[in-house]
Each structure stands twice: as structure tokens, then as C-alpha cells.
Figure 1: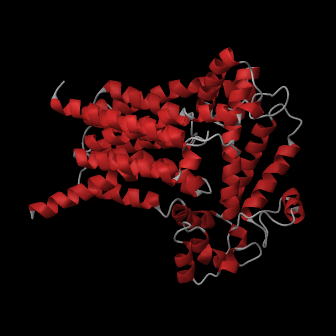
Figure 2: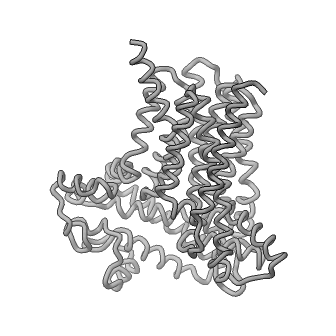
Figure 3: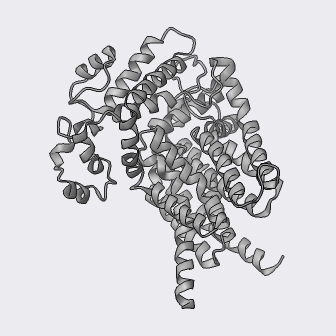
Length: 470
């Protein structure tokens, strides 16, 4: 082994050892809730009833409400554990040593995330110092959100790790023109889609962007290795996700990854209906928590304006004191009305649709289809509002992280640093997709943070080298 690979192995080995030693100690026996609880329920139902389902019924029916990869891993752990320790109820698995043990699987995602960040930094020409800085920033990111990323069974850490790995493999495939790397990138993108369904559209968009970039740089299109590589990437991704989408088509008549897209798009379509006065204050309402006071002061928005019933009260996510008016509006399907939260109005409308289809074989899938139709109708009726709100949602997604990464990508394109651009494209694509087709809460941007952890030290190093040369 030559000195450079040996050094890489030693650094990664040391980092992995520190991860194992430190992060396992951070895990607690705190029960999981919300999305993480649904993931655990899917895993427990698979281990005990043989079906992937978020239902808590005695005999759960299969559904496609959430992505399957992390529940499959959790179900395998439950099955192996119960083979020696005996079967246990869902409540037992969501408490004490059992839930703490299930959370330990996140350490594997941490290792993958750190390895992907290190390899990306080095492939992009960064020094060992830049690589170590990337690792430290990634660890800082995980530490900042440790309760949601590590001490949980949510999917954001897995999505961040797999997206970073997929972007790094795509970068290597672009640089080396190696068909095996293109296939590897496709496989990892497929796994990422089975954790976060929106990455399916990101991967398809990435393929188109790479073909255009190859043509622009006169690398040939689509007959040379870049064009063939993109086809290999998309084909490998399709092969990975097809068993799951085929299952959903067989059971529910929809070859999709999940059936939550309609609900999310309806949330977005409702918030698109903001008035001009509300739009002026949306930058305050959607500001990151640490910047909100300063932004609100600059825009002349007071704290009372953000409360339910205030001038910007429709952007509030505080539960209403009385759900009666919201339920009545949802049942009448009049769209969002003044004085009530956009979020809770859209949620109430979705619940009305679920109740309407309760007697059908796949009620959630049918409700999601109708929610998507209603959302598209609202967007078509107000396309200007939808486009106008998109920058506001970019701002909501961690203070415009997408824009920052996009600008770095633009500079990389202009300076012909195609390697850096190729690495950034999946992350920027995810941000743009979320800004256009979701309500882009800050958590949706977490899988993009590792890209910043890689490119910021690299950018600083490039600038420093130029200053020293002068």
C-alpha cells in the first residue's frame, strides 16, 4: 500500500473509531414519535405480521405511506433479536434498551456520511486538511441536530448519507469515465430513493443535466461514455426501486414510491394563496429561528403579527384553539380562508379526503390522488403566486442554502470546474425540487448540509492558495 492510500485508511479508520466511541454514547432510551414512530411501526408490523404498514390495527393492511429501506433494516434487527430474546409488543420496542439498540443502526449511516464527505473533498482536489475540516463540519452538523438525526429512527440521516455517497460516486464516474462507478452511483441513488422518494426526480433531473453539460463541453452526446454512463446510472437506480414500486402497483394500482406527494403538494398549494400583504411579511415568517428577530425588525413585523389571528397568522403552525371553523371550511372545499392557518387548513382538507375514501381498498392512496388533483388545480389557477412563493420557500429551507450551493455551482461552471459542479448538482436539485413542489420546512434541507461541509473548506483552501501565490 502506497503512503497516500495508507494515510487515507488511517484517517478514515481513526474517524470511524471516534464515531463509534462518541456517538453510541449519545443514544438514549427515549421513545420515538411522529415520522420515526411510523417507521418503527412499519418495521414491527413486518417482523410480526409480514406486511409493511404504518397501521396500528390488530391485523394491519399493507400501505405505501412511507419509504421502505430504513424500516426493512429495523425489521431485520427486530427479527434477529426476537429469535433469541422472545417476541415483544410495539410499546416494549419503543422504550428502554430495545429502542436504544435500534437507534444504534444510525452509527452505520454516520460512517457512510463521513466517508462520503472525506472522499468527495479529496476527489475535488482538497488537501488532507480540507478533508479533515469537512469531517469536522459534518460531525458538527450531526451534533447540532443529534436528537432528530441520531437519537431517532427518522430517515434524514440515512438520506444525507446516501445522497452524499451517490454524489461522490457520480463525481468519480464523471472523472474516471468508469462504467462500474456509474452503476454504483445508480445503485446508491436507488437506495436513496427508497429513503426519500423526492430523490427519484432529483436523479432523473441530474441525468438530464449531466447530458447537457457533456454536450456543452463537447464531450459528446449521447454516444460517448458520459451519455452511456447516465443511462447506466438511471437503469441501475430503476432496478433497485422496481421491486418496491411493482409491489405498490400490484397492491394499490400506483407504481410510486410513496403516496404522500399529494398531501405535501396540497400544503404547498394552500400557502401559495398568500395575499400581497402576507407576501411582504413571509420573509420574516419563514426566517431561520436565529435570524427571525433581525429579519422581522427589518421588515417591520411584530411578534403579535406571527401569532394565530395576526397579520401573518396564516403562516403559523400553532394548533388552533377551535378546530370547528377549519373543519367546516375543509368539508366545503373552498380553499384557504382568511384568519386560519394554511397548514392546518390543508391538513384538515386532507383528512376530509381520507374519510371520504375510507371504505375503499386503498384509502390513503385514493385520498392522496385526490389531494394531488386539488393541489394542481390551485396551482394552475394561481401560477404567479406559486412562482412568487418559490424564493420564499428557498429562504425557508435553511436560509437559502440551495441558493448558496447553486451560486457556487454557477461559479464552478463558469470556471470550468465541472467536477465541483457535478458533485453539487444533486444537492441543488433537491433544494429546487423542494422549493417548487413542497412547503420546504428546514428539516427537508438537512440532507443538503453535507455538500456545504465539503465545498466550504475546499473554497477557503482555493482562495487561500491564490492569496499566497500573489
